Amino acid sequence: MSIVQSIIDIVHQEMARNQVSKVSVIRLVVGEFTAVVPDSLAFCFELITKDTPLEGVKIELEQVPLTGRCRACGKEFPIVEYRFVCPECQSNEIEAISGKELFIKEIEAE
Amino acid sequence: MKVPVVRNILEANEQLAQENKTRFQEKGLLVLNLMSSPGAGKTTLLERTIEALKDKIRIAVIEGDIQSTYDAEKIAQHGIPAVQINTDGACHLDSRMIQQALKEIDLSALDLLVVENVGNLVCPAEFDVGEDYKVMILSVTEGDDKPLKYPLMFSKSTVLLVNKIDLLPYINTSVEKIRQVSLEINPQLEIFEVSCQNGTGLESWFNWILKRVPHYKGA
Image (cartoon, rainbow over all chains, first blue to last red):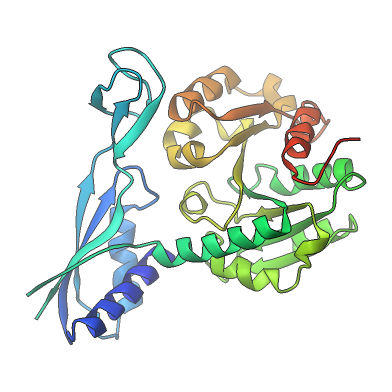
């Protein structure tokens, strides 16, 4: 819920900054390894924006899978079932290189 | 017309978390963000911890709950400052709520501040409150599948307390599996197996805290 509120706050700021009065789409980039559940987010957005200027705005989510890079051997690989273990050298010194994103990429204004 | 934004959705919270953190560091205190699902034993662990440490260090607690002041009253009975935050429905605490609560606490009279988050294994993991460490509890009655179901919290925590191990003879939970899967998600995770009921394993947890309190020089 506060994630949705934060999205709304940022969108309002960006609308003012860019002198936009109507938004049709909000595009988000959401990593697999975040606390965001896409369906709940859309549902929550609908609830909160009812009877406000953002009612009916479409939320588009670009989901990013979790991938890692091994600090020992440099191998890059998809992390399946949250196993932060290198398939090449079995090291557990793994840095997540994608999957933690949580940002607003752009808005579509009319 | 496309308007590029590229802004972190949690930026407002993260900025306030940084402000909180700076304040805590200036006062030289240790701040823990305690998280678990409802009923895993957060409040009982806190009561045990306060009883064991209150003669050695100065402790205060911020209690987060959706409703009620029940937990804060329980904590206050131990003679330490306890501030209740009611989130009015929100399933986690955020840095703004902590800033409000801090108005009622004298930080310069403290060594340890524990923030007891709302019972929830998902959202609290995403919202920093300015803490030094995230500490989570998983009770063995919740089952050994939880690390895989809620990996984010296991990944962001520094400490995992596996609680209620006195109940292991009666259930089919494998602590070994909890340990193995949690360490695959987070190899740096420190794991303590404890029972807040009979006190097993708590001594190592108390020592973990004392080692990290900046002003504690040892007994």
